[in-house]
Amino acid sequence: MKLSLGPLQYFWPREEVFKFYRQAVTWPLDTIYLGETVCSKRRELSTRDWIALAEELAASDCEIVLSSLALLEAESELSALTRLIENGRFQVEANDMSAVQLLRDRGLPFIGGPSLNVYNHVTLRLLCEDGLQRLVLGIEQGRALVEEFRASGEPLPELEVIAWGRLPLAYSARCYTARALDLPKDDCGFRCIEYPDGLALKTRNEQAFLTINCIQIQSSEHCDLAPEINELAAAGIGLLRLYPQTEGMEAIVTRFRQAIDSGIPPQRVGKENGYWHGCAGMDQVTPTSGQT
Image 1: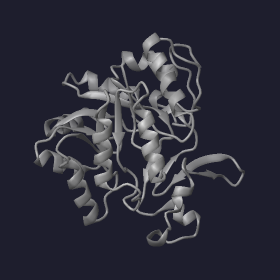
Image 2: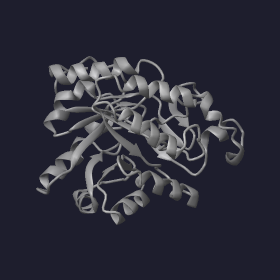
Image 3: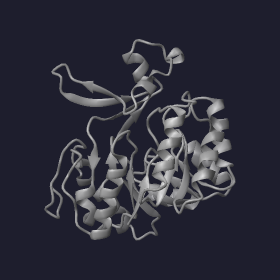
């Protein structure tokens, strides 16, 4: 089983992004995903910058993948997507069906991101015919769907599951961060850069509820599937995706790497694992290994 660092979901200053990834490439990772997947207005790094960073990191032993936007709304975004796909070297994670079409038209293999909404083996087969080589399961797609895939008897691509981080629950044309700050989306001032791990949203009773991240809504707590490490391996999951955060990321990567290498599930750190077990995502379910 391998470890991947998912694409950065938040808006960080340019130099912080470069610093983070130059450190990340020294961690025990197998794959690093690069690119803006949330909002095209975030332009600390352009498409050209992401490709240049990929070129720099490619000198390491890590597989480098370029990730596309999950929600496209304008011709300019389609043009940027085309440039990303035509980078000439790196495989692309398609997070929108427009990316799938462009990749298919060019005969390029690709990785299916978690926002593609693959809910059955028929859809998976069609995407494989289009060039899908790896599928990142959607956030709510757990063990039951993997079992359905395998029961179909059809050849499967490599499977990746989100094992750590705040889960990307939904995307909208509206910017939630701008709305929370009483700003218009078209004149937001890029204020989400002030919230490098998202903006916490509470209920009226002051209970943690969700996390706001520009046009994206995330879970409040972190998903943590490290205690399910043996169950994931038995299900045929090939990669565990860890989403970047500002603090403690190297320790998180090391924790998962040690669990993979030793086969010993660690104690739970994040509070959520329900989706893998077919429950509400915010639930914490005791895995079959008996670890908590």
